[in-house]
Image (cartoon, rainbow, N blue to C red; front, side, top):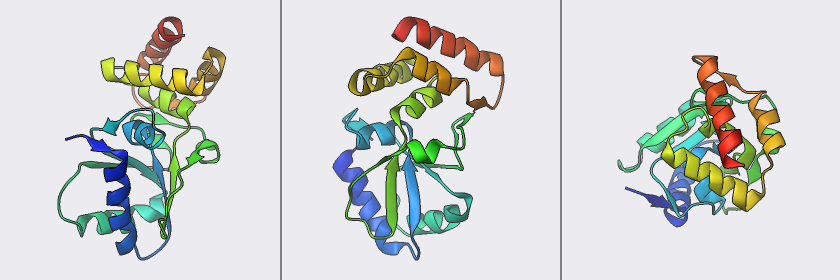
Length: 169
């Protein structure tokens, strides 16, 4: 079931009411793309949080009625890529009326480098959208991707990166 931007923000408003302390949520993947108006909706909800905020966020989400699938990542370990330590500084703030949640969207270059790890058809389309809307350039994506630590067979990431750089720019 796809989740549009209004539904996503509505969900976060409910979570915001329950949280007992301020947290920073970084939207990643399709969630970030939906919040940045790069796509109309996302299939699931993906957030990155600090390790210290994970438990309070999970507790708040569990107290809501079951609904959307939520994937939680921590400290920049997104899918199978560990982003460089400056990833939060590069994030784009998302304006909301939330009180306890500071909402960020992963920078489009970081969205691209995390999607390169899997690189299925949907990821390719998402990468193309990021390139178009944010006018990303090949050298910036390549530079950032070379700073990523891929957990798994590093050669697979390098092959995907080579394909993406050659065919999508």
